[in-house]
Length: 89
Length: 89
Image (cartoon, rainbow over all chains, first blue to last red; front, side):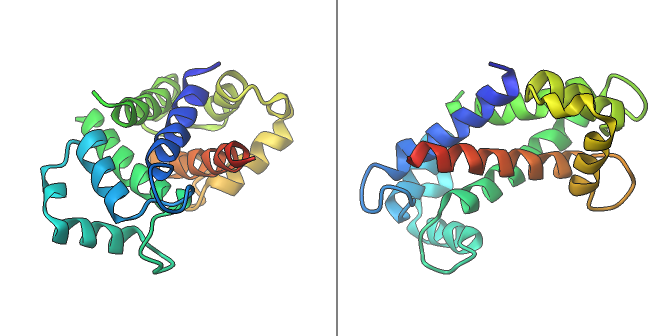
């Protein structure tokens, strides 16, 4: 398997690992987003429920208060663009 | 480093590895897209120059005939959504 295929499988596995914890098995609810932000992105802001709400609102394009896989990929793309910008410096 | 951070770093590294081969160091030109499709995604269609042109046209939102990092992330997001759909079955 190539490095790119491997990375995409890790993205799917990460989403599924958190989405399957509780509630709908294919959506990240608020608690799951909070855990993902804390454990995967080490975001201290995730300890503040207001910040988690803002994060979800920002990603949740269909306004159902949950984050589906395509919405999760918007977050991944934004973060990867930041890492890429940093890699140019 | 978390698995999600690791995956995003692989995405950036993969893009940079191919983009830096020739021409502009921060863009994938046609030859680089072709090599990436063949080596990373094992796409046999990449052997056909017409198919590579179609692929670039589909990703190249600013119509400069090259693929920048954010355009590359659109491809990654689409492919990851396909893998995710498959993972639900």
